[in-house]
Structure formats: structure tokens, C-alpha cells
Length: 382
Image (cartoon, rainbow, N blue to C red; front, side):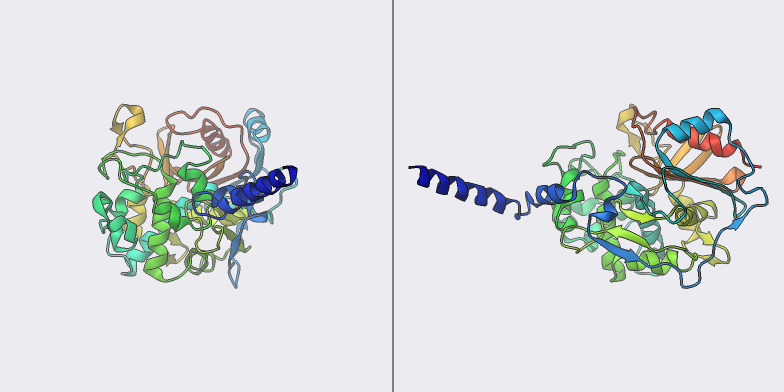
């Protein structure tokens, strides 16, 4: 009897382990292997190299580099919030740069959702080059699942503005939720195929990482290249990136996790801030179409925000956030645990903050720390 019990128990264990290799459960296996998500996931997840420039273009130091002083009250908040890097660039010159906890200018850090803005810019380049017809093109032209039923009504623009109307629920943090599956799945396309229509697209704003992953599949299909190669080709190399970056891949290394997961050094994050500041231009080269960037950095105020009683969306464009602060509309790249790149156009300045954070309740979709970092930069800008 004991022998039969042991055999039965062993069979059950093997069957349960076998389930972890099936699509509905494979993300749990990867979670057990990779662990809880952090800004250091590039050390444990599958990655693809995003090549740096052959001829780097280092940031020039301002004559007042690190001589300006952030007020102690603001610096204390930055210091106490697990910040690893804080950079301020004005007029194309590095004005302020500080690192904490052993971080240096060579330290790679994860972007989380700040990478969404990079994907949006690739869409703009695809339109400029004729690889994508327009933002009004049906998603189903690129992603077969979105050619079915009511999903066929979803346009690329609806994905860019987080208004696809699908059932992807960012707030569902359960082990079997789409968010968990998207981050830990063997094939992100499998998760995209689980997205179904919930409401009409292009009406209500709702933050969905799934929307950006679909954009990633569109970009791959349109260009016929992987996202890491495209980011190197269109951004890192022409902008003179000094350090190679890494992009996290899904479990089977089929696709980049487009909704997150660029990993780079602080100085190279600032190069994307320059594109925000100049509407897509790096020095003498227009990298992203100017008309597209102007739209991308403007709020999609034709959409309704269900969390604010249906008010117009004044804080989000094409995968870029807009921080309304002190009379300024400040576009930003925004990632989990406090990865931020801001472009303060009124000061011709870029701000980069990387690190971890003590998450608190957002104020109108923004962590209060956003205002601390912007105020700190404003305090030293000329």
C-alpha cells in the first residue's frame, strides 16, 4: 500500500510539474525561476543586446557641472526614496549628475514602462518610412488576432493612447492575470491572443501594458526586424549612445517585452529626453518625424478618464505622460518603481531619475515623487 501511495504521489507531482510547461501555466514556472520583478531583471531574464554607437557622443559638461546645489529639503527626499541616479541636462550640457548606493555612470538599470515611449517613437518612424500607413490603420493588418470580431475596430492610434477597449486589466495582479502572464510568459504573442473586446475603442482611457505589447508586434511585422535591432539602428547609434543596452525577451526569446524592459545607463536615457525636448531631433538629424512627436507629446483630450468622472484626458499622449506642474505641461517617460525622463521645454532641460521607490497613492495618475524630482531640477536650472 505504501509503495502504491508513493508511486501515485510521484505521478501527481510529475503531472503538476508538467502543467508548468503548458501555455496557461508556463509563466508560473518562469516566475519561480526568475523571481519577483525588479530593476535588475536583466541579470536573470533572457535579453538581447541593443548595440551602442560606433562613435559615441558623450554629453559635454556645463561650466557649472555639479557646482550648483539642490536645496537640502529636496535632496533629502530624493536621497531617502532609493534613488540610484539623478541627472539634469540643460542646453545640451550636463549640469548635475549624482549616483547613490554604488551606482555609477556605467550602471545599467531597468526602465519598466518608460520603454513604452520608445515603442511609440518607432511607430512614428514606421509611418515616416511608409512601413505603417497611419495611426488610423487597423491593428488587424499586422496582428491576426485583432482582425477578428470587434477587435477589428481597434486602430493603432487606440493602442498608442491606451484606449483599445480590451479586457486587459493592469490592476489585476493575480498569478493568473494577463499582467503576470505578459511579464513571465514564454511567448508574449500567446498572451496578446487572450485579449478580448470589452468596450468600444477610442472612447475611454485605461492604462494597459497589453496595448503596448501589441504595438511591439506591429513594429516587428512592419520593419521585419526585432525591436532591439531597431532601437540600436534608429536611436542608439545615431544619437551616439556610450553604453550598450539590454532588452528583456519572453521565455522562448521570441519577442522583446515591448511594454517594458529596456535596460540602459542614465546618460543614454537622457538621449530619449532630448528627442522629447526637440520634437524628435538629435542635433542635425530628425530621427522621429516632428509632426508625429508633437502629437505624441500632446494629451489625447478627446478621450474620457473613467477614474476622474469622465473628464478629458489631459495627462497622456502616445505612450508619453504629460505632467501638468506649475503652469507647464512636462512630457515624460514613466516606469514602475520610479524610472523617469522629463523634458522641461521652458528651460530647454532634461531630467533623468532612476532607482527604486516607496510607492504611495498616486495623485491624478502620478506618484507625488514626480513633482519632487521636477522641483529639484527647477531649483538649479538657469
